[in-house]
Image (cartoon, rainbow over all chains, first blue to last red; front, side, top):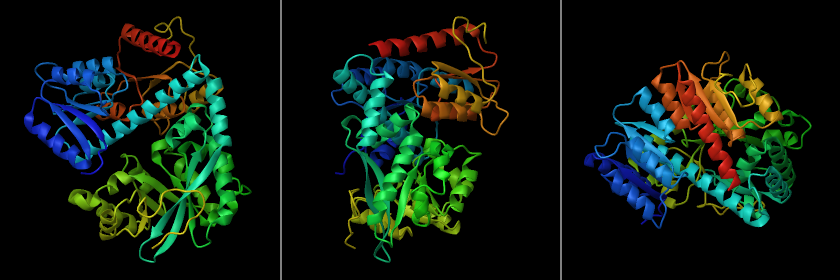
Length: 386
Length: 110
């Protein structure tokens, strides 16, 4: 039995659709609990000892419609994401979905991938939300008073920056049996911001994304002195950093290493569609190469393939997970890999954890792999046994 | 709009960049944005950016568009709290804003 991704509750008066959802989501690694009566579902949510990560509901149901159901769920737990499905999408329906706080409006029939992605996205958001709350209540316990108070948050953030360091994770070339590159990953010893997504969300909230980015680039440049010459360095760039002139400064520490640096850009963080390609052209002029990160995590990154013409494309781990067991996923991944090669991009698979996933990646034509199978992110540049 | 929102301090911005500059200078509790913009971006892109940078801000979109795809994007991208089709009811917009802002305040105080 593989590790479960989390718990999803599904409500639909149509038994056939319940089975489809269970098969699709169960196959991806979610633990699915089904109901055909929304009232029973609510009772279960209320007394659940193990919380659900998200709730998926049909809109047209005889006992109680999806909107009323979503409102009832959110009354119990405002953070629990609700996804609504309908075979009859309408403008008013979508507006009503927003009013009830639904995070997704899915039209039936849907492709299995669509459902899988929507659920994964909702659950991930929920996770971040929960972390935020936990960090806030932690802060409340420590400092008392208003957790929103920016003073406290700023102090924690300043400490987190001060105590930050870079971990490196190898990306291996399985055919040449070499380390192709190391990805630099932000870490901090400040307890309340230890989760990188929370750390970055805090930077966004305090409007300090630029500050954080400068710190990261400085730290990578410093650490790079110990990096093996043959390996490239992958450095993450937040979409908002494309507006920071420091990133484009020729005399910045990282710019001196530009020819061996690949900047990873993810569209999740909101690249300005108009300014993005221009910024990227300037970065290339400095010698940097560009990677589009997390392809497959949402539906946004495809646009970046066309507009940014990246040298490297990284496939999100949600596409790689259990690749060996999902023929459909393999076809999707293999088609993306072929397309990327035709566009002249190298393809990296992220999150490779098992030998079977590695072999499936190689079978799909991907030779650059990153994941726990090879090494976890760690201080320094550990050699990899290949 | 000014009449609808009487009692609140209102600041107007003619373009997304102008609004982002204002946000950088001082905090706002809520933003009401039109969907149609002159530039290449639209109101949803703008509110998405606001959500990233100022997640605590209440975000409303108003639009004359009857395009289902726009409304679906609004749900699925999660950048707006309320979506108003023109012509909207001033009372509903006002009360939705009052309720959401009140909820934020009491949450922060608890």
